[in-house]
Length: 86
Image (cartoon, rainbow, N blue to C red):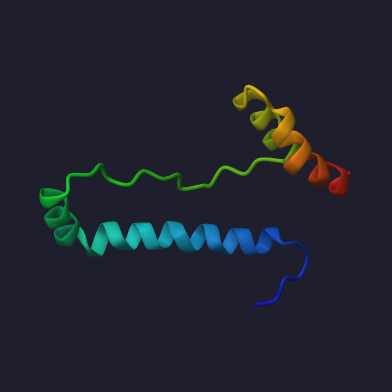
């Protein structure tokens, strides 16, 4: 495979690959999934047909909102990336 413009091309392919795999498993392995479910109860896999993509800024905002003390995470992981990309 060749990346022609951007790494998002790979992300698109992997996204389609997983959706196709999950669809195929649900369709062709229905009996097996039911047998497993009888022994080990589980909820059916739920996934989006179109994967949610977030921008870097949206990711940073989610981290800031989700973590009570965001300074260690910000200083260790996010700040170097932020400086690298901007």
